Length: 96
Image 1 (cartoon, rainbow, N blue to C red):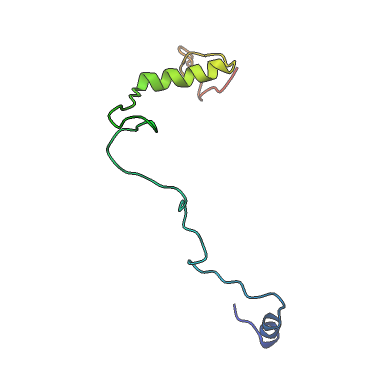
Image 2 (image 1 turned 30 degrees about the vertical axis):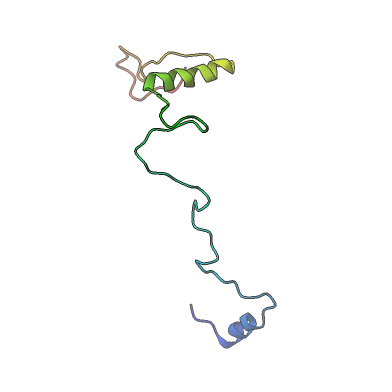
């Protein structure tokens, strides 16, 4: 896009200061977070480093379900997306 002299003059006479975009003015993404990429297991703050927290998959799953049950949600067992023995269904049913 080429500006003619009149448009250029209007831009130069603008009352607002020019906008400056500099990488030094921007904060890098996630700069306020501290990350640790060690292979050691997580340790509770204030505990001894030798006491590691053990969270096997079953414990994580049970804790997740117990949280929502405690909030009044009903547990609904898993079921297939496509009903069994329904040859007429040509798509995955998302409700009743």
